[in-house]
Structures are given as structure tokens and as C-alpha cells.
Image 1 (cartoon, rainbow, N blue to C red):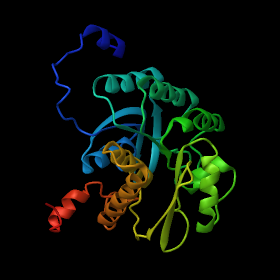
Image 2: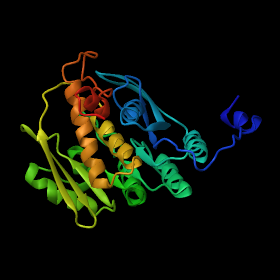
Image 3: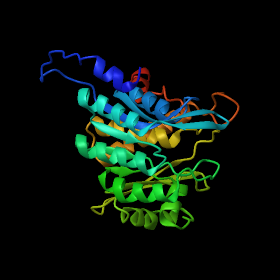
Length: 297
């Protein structure tokens, strides 16, 4: 039985519901699946749960991968992607959306139309364009559609240095160049940019948050020594979306998301998972940690 057959064969179940009842902070991840569990929608769902949100997914692609690399990728048909998004949003809704890798122009346009159709307001885009190995994951045509049609609909984009270099057509050499690069990225149409400087050498990690209204925030922290960094970009962007769903203003959402990922990296820094680049400890929950340390209510 096809998806269409299932949809047409069953009448939707309608349950009475009072508008006064509380609901979870709801976050939808539109991204690929990582069978190894360290990145993609698996990392997103773990992050949403750790931060007290209800997570949902619309899967763009299925990957066969582990800590050592990607073995295969299978794109989900665009009609199925569209139906996933509509099914979730028409019933449950979303207070924020995190978007990961979108592998071709048609997929990007499905997401663009869904944002407009459902009037989504809090949209975090992690523009996954370059693999850790340095290989490009997105053709130039797809990059152009992403920039022209999706960037203006986002709340914030979160490129790393390789992705920023691809978008700008130039390298970013050193922490002193981050501010100018962030300004150039804003000119591409996104209302806010978190440019991640984690790939720069040195004992300090510097990120720059740039807002279209001129606001600027420079975030610095000591580098954590670890081989377990798989999924950091997915996790940070999903943590920002979670905090936006929890109604934090964007600068505070970014600060709190960054604090969460630093805690998750530290908590998993010396844990052995697989034989390659392992994942963070997504189970690190800031609220739980404060209670255990005597700082909770």
C-alpha cells in the first residue's frame, strides 16, 4: 500500500481539545537521517529532548554511516518529504524549525513552499554544504536556490568556515576576519548569521553572531580536546531552534545553545563510541546537571 493509499483509506481521528490546555515547546527537524546516531535528525531529537522540547521530523535523506564515514545516501522522494511536513504541521504544529542538509533544488523548494504555506516564523538553517573531509555535498545550482529562496525566510543561518568560504567565494583566515565575513554573509539575505569559527587553529574557539539590525555578539570559549565532535553543527543549530521554541530572544537562544553544546562536548570528550570520530553526549541536560549540583529548585 502506498502512502497515498494509506492517507485516503483512513479518516483522520479528531479528539476534542481545549485551547486552554498547555502544550510542549514543539520543534520540527527537516534533515537527513544518520544511522550512526551522532548527527542529523537523531542528534536533533536527542537535543530537543535534553532541552525539554517535543521533537518531530521530516526526513530528507537516509544515510548508511557510522563514526568512520558515510557509505550510502538515499534521497527521500519530494512528495514524501512534503507529506511528512504537512502531516506534522497540520496536526501538531511547530514553535520552531531546524533545517539541515537539502541535497537538490527541488528539495529546497519543497521546504520553501512549506515555510510559506504554514507561516513558519522561527527557522534555523544549518547550511550543510561541505563534508568533514572537505568534499562538497551540494552542487552550485542547489547553493544558488538555497541562498536566493530560503535564506530570506530564515531566522538565522549557522555556517561553519568551510560553508562560509563556499558561500563567499573566499577563505576566512583567522579570527580577525570573522566579523567582515559575517557582514558579507548577511548581505546574502539572511536576517542573522552565526558564523562558527571552530575550524580555526588555537586554544580558543570564536563564533560571531551578526544581526541585520547591526547587532553583533562575539562568543569565545576554551577549546575542548576531544575526537568526539561528530554532529556538532547539527546539535548547535537544533539547540538554537529548541531555545527559540522556548521563547528566548535570538541572542539569548544562541548563547544558551552554545552553552549546551559545550557541556555536551565536555561530557562526551573521553567516551569511546565506534572507531572514528565519535558523537557528543547529547544526554547531557543542563537542567538535570544544575539539580544534581545543588543549584536547582
